[in-house]
Length: 274
Image (cartoon, rainbow, N blue to C red; front, side):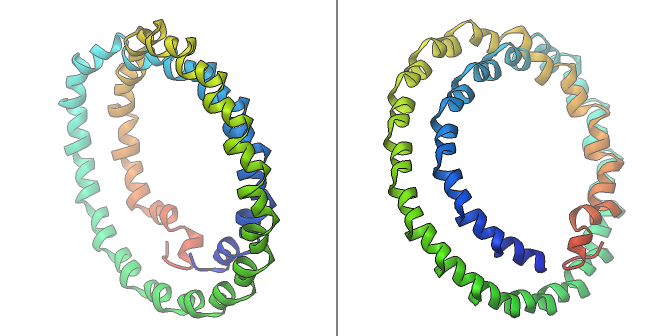
């Protein structure tokens, strides 16, 4: 959080290259932006055949409303899901007590790891130790807030090139802006034939009112994903418990891997110990 890598990440040369360099203009205002936001790729992505196939195609019907919905919401699987033994094992069983009230919780909220994190030597090293002074008041701070990198970022040539230089005019007022906000691509996007084809054309009727809608909202393909047997296997089946409430959860959230996962080796050297 506060080591030398932070300086290189937040205030180093890569930041200037990322936030203010030539790549920014090429990304936010260059031809790639027009190709991304208003070009043919947008129509192909937002309004093209792939969108129809994704939002309203046969797979959606199979996902939202098919024959497996009744089996999930009102059939025997529902009772097994909401009131059966799997629910008790998930919401009230031994895994829940082990997670919320067991030894691992005490080890997490009140045990030695908590004291080591909130009140131990690592906290002093983080909030008041040499690393903090190096971060908030040390030489790295001067180099970050008042040093050459700051001047180069806020007041130096890169800033002028970004906010007030020729790139700014090219970005905010230049031809690329007009091409993006007011140029032919805008008319083609907001008012041109693609808009009519998107909002009022045959694809809209086919999407909102046509046969694909019925196939999407009420068709046979809707159920197998959200309400069918795969749903029970996904939300309440044996695969769910090992991940959300099983031993893997304790090993991930409260076990030795938790420290390695949430506060791993690189972070533990600075803020917390594994």
